[in-house]
Length: 461
Image (cartoon, rainbow, N blue to C red):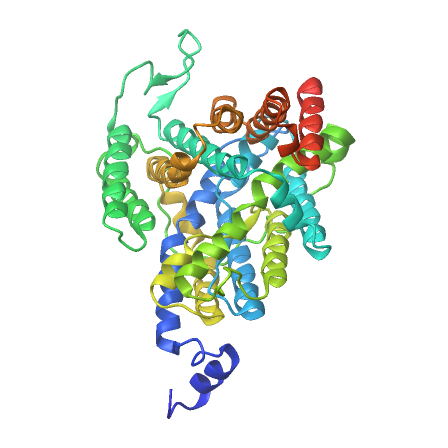
């Protein structure tokens, strides 16, 4: 970097670019690459959170959610870049947003502010665990099979949500079969065709390792829906597609600050504590694995596989969960898509700063949210579910004391539309089967406590 002057030299000094074997141009490209691979969350997160009304009949506004999603991603990613100097990006966590919508709001009948209050509470609990050094102890207490099964189960949960949202799968109260293909057992209409085409086209892009494949799939599907709407009106079947007069607008911050701890009074202390605990488990394990996986690509791990400033990384990630709930955008977490930027040469926090700046720019595109059809985001949810299924082969299928609980986790979640139910069923089965097989010593004390808590949860549910 000899001969650089001004801003480039200051950036090199602040981020230590030369020591990491990189430069400003490479970091900018890497940051943009990471953004392209995860920008789909700007539309998918609002799609999920606007899917259901709360117990009062209130529904969240799409533009406000897009603003909050972009705001939290920008602030959290900027903090990660500046405080850790690692190429890690954060945004609303896939899976956790569906917990908020379909479990806390639709299932447990919380209001939207109360549901976001649960997210703030679990983020604060995780932050305390990081500050006291207990987070790693909790991670170690839960067996690897359970950790993997939680992620796989959330993937299946997202997939079925995608199928339902797109109209590819539906529930027919008059049919003894719990779910049916399309409407009344038949696939009809252009929207279903668009869902299938979007799924196959985006899947092909994923197959070809195209950067930003999910975002490209959403964009292409949206263009087709717009053309169909302009040509055939509502007869095309895209009644939810709203064409804006302008693609730009001032940010809508009306969702920021709308959270409440009233969920404690609504649920009762025992159920509230268990709800926060189950969400904490869902939010708990991904970060360490993500940071290590990105570190392998970005080459910031030491010989023993450790990454620099672990306490700071985990604290930023934990406080991002708090920020996500406080802004009404659901919990934010570190994204595995950061590995795409690392593969493009990102080695420092400058890449994260670039990603954050691009998310900040998206604060002004909220009108575009209304033009995205559910068939586009539904297809993406199915493919996100696919990506989360990749660890299923590494589960210990030859050990029934591990495999049966894992199987319960990853099946009870989608079949009951509840992540808590899945985790609870798996944890209880794990403890019982280990004890009955004479291998109770393999179970850590925290797992016994968690299983007992979930027994109470199912008893009072």
